[in-house]
Length: 424
Image 1 (cartoon, helix red, strand yellow):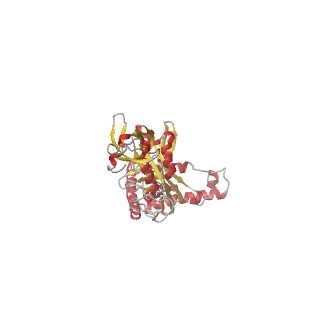
Image 2 (cartoon, helix red, strand yellow):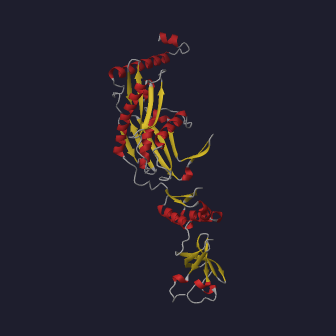
Image 3 (cartoon, rainbow, N blue to C red):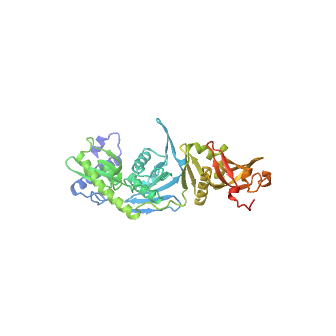
């Protein structure tokens, strides 16, 4: 204590000096125990992983969820699937872009037994979330295969080291639970190092205690095929020798494969179908010059589909049409309507049209949205028709056949081609 008083003259409290002395003693004993006996403070071997438990589908109402527990570190990861309109808008120096994958990491005070206010995401939350996102983003399916916007929220329920890597594991399982066809499961592990210069020990799955007293925090995440993300924090001024780095990577690979094995035993692939609570999404492609025809004057066509089905419809500049609806029956109805509004007229095909104009020489029939054809008076019936109004009325639906279409797009229709000679 006398030495501490000299070392820290500005701090005269005995309690502070005793606490500092105890911490230095624990620091030396813990490190010596690992270096000399290859046994860690919690009794584990240097390459031993803490016990793992997994609960996929823990929350019944979310689109996907998982509780991943490794030792005294636990996360509850949830997945929400959204439409392309839900993409995050990013503004930076390079301009505006859209992000279809978001991962938010929350580290509340109760996870470490602290009574502190939640002041929003800090450096830790942003950094850990970015690392976990890097680990998972390249395993997601392409937008053509899976046109959903994906958001993962990782809530750390308890923390004793490596919560960011628990987020990777929990997020991977939650994505599988949500039915996201990932390229493979992803697991993460944090590696530590204890060294006195002459000898060293690489430790797997470090606890908070080992993170505090150790010389390295090396996080690696990846699949059974390789690494997808890593991050290293080093306390040694000289850095880490290449030989030790190779040893750490090899030991991390073994640990990661062990964790992946536990994860695969619980949920080896994605669910066959997405949650019934998630919106169903259908994608159609139309020619760029047909976009205006589909939308209709003042958005008439697209508004009509939305009002009748309740679906969300998004039209892209390249002709992609995304339809989203939680009701699968209404989704299919909306898909059929979109297909109807974007159909092309085919010669020889029969259509049910509506009389939109009557002239002395015939009637104009709208057979598709924005597509009208002439039903000449001679094509109305087999017998002679004196006046068009004697057979057809404005607004009446009539079945007609397309008999010709010229290079200018003018359509010629026939009603009598569908009638037997006895019928009018």
